[in-house]
Length: 384
Length: 173
Image (cartoon, rainbow over all chains, first blue to last red; front, top):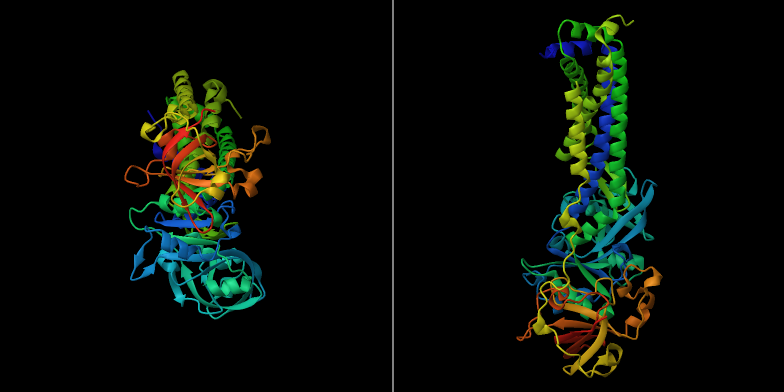
């Protein structure tokens, strides 16, 4: 026969301060788990969303996966257009986007400065970068930039510093902010976009960093890869955009592994904290537990009741931490080497956080409860 | 209580066994000869062949030739999904095993020489269409395989050389 459910619940209210402190400790631990899992999920989502399976990137074979280091001939887009058939063409416009991509020091009007990611594009860019949406303002004209909604986070400057009409300084020139754009959570949101020609002039470069091409349905990237092999003089390589970001995921694997290690360590710390609390709680109740045995409750029933207390506390802490995480952590922008991304407390993060919380409740309660029940009833009844 | 401990221990052992088990699939490797099409493989070694470097200087557009070279020239010398790859002149050295280079076929130590000693091979069928099978599967070759390729040269104004080929002889290492 099990102890009544209310018995365990009431026990928590018998020592309200201790229960509240434990709740706060567990909620803090679970919050840390939410934070770390939110970081991992945000990073992964940002890389997954950034890749379009229909887009092929053509960049320098010598750039070692880094588009910022890539430099290819300015005539590459024309060569690709004239040599290949699998690229989308509509109303006489080829869906191909020549781009210059570089990291530059950006100084805002209010004196803040930081390294930003700048992409020089032509008006065909939105045909290929299909996730980009203009939120406010307009497409950049001469001497203007359009700011992604996470660009200020990447720069480490206040959001207002990239408001429409403000001026920024980069590559030795002043640029006016003409608009703000979103890109469905992808990496572009941490970038500043301007006209390709303007950026080439400012950077004193005539080459391109990459060419992005939108493939027709069913077209193969192999045709473009073969073109790159055949045109050895251009030193090009072609890769499907999703594969490029998958390779970046591999690049950031150690970071993600480290984050998972932190999650494990935090969870382990939570288990020990829970255990400590339960040892304290149970040691003061040895006579009570022995009395329960004396009146006929089996050890397993008492153990279940003690675990129930731990789990109730952990579940409450998980709910509290989950609510705080959803309100305050979810959507928080984080600066990172590749740009910026937002922390995502999604279904997976909630599941992991709550699972860690409940595990802490069970594992934290088991050892002290087992220790208390191991004593003979007669001895335990006389315990001080 | 003993039964409870036993159940707990058994659950733990099961979890460890499942968690630590390695799947067979993960350790299996694909046989290199999978899907090799003998119609593209020459049964005997051609008696005459031209090294890639010489071919880049001598061959004209449309000329029939047999090139000898080593598959490589970049980190990914094969085109995924097409029977096409690049070959490098055999006289150009690649990183030897003791150089601790994980991808010796990219000729990272001698890239300046590769520029004038590389050619692209594109396998075509009887109708002249590119073969949409990875060359590794079609020919059973891999990076650094030495091959003799027979076909027609395609030149461009920039000096690039492509051999549109229909027969390959793979030299035994």
